[in-house]
Image (cartoon, rainbow, N blue to C red; front, top):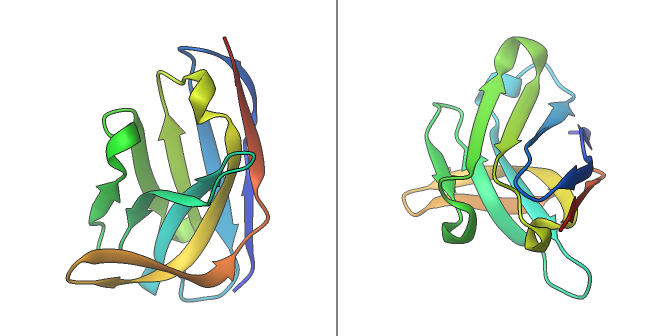
Length: 120
């Protein structure tokens, strides 16, 4: 599955951005999808995920500031980010993964990322 994230950019602290990720394939509605970020010098971190059934989960560090959603008709998953902080600066990637009882797990199916820069 090919994934393409876009919507990143430069935003001031306290601002908002909405990222989008489009996926190839005719069965997008059955995909479990996630968003992760990678800051310079740091490991990639999963920040949000949504199951095919609409269940969601978020990383504690960004909980309350993120909303993940999906539009199956458009093969697109979104990540709404509010109250952004300089430490949120990173490349954000979308992922097609899976869902177990413990929640989302990423797979190697990553798209090209989109850079989010938050200025102070």
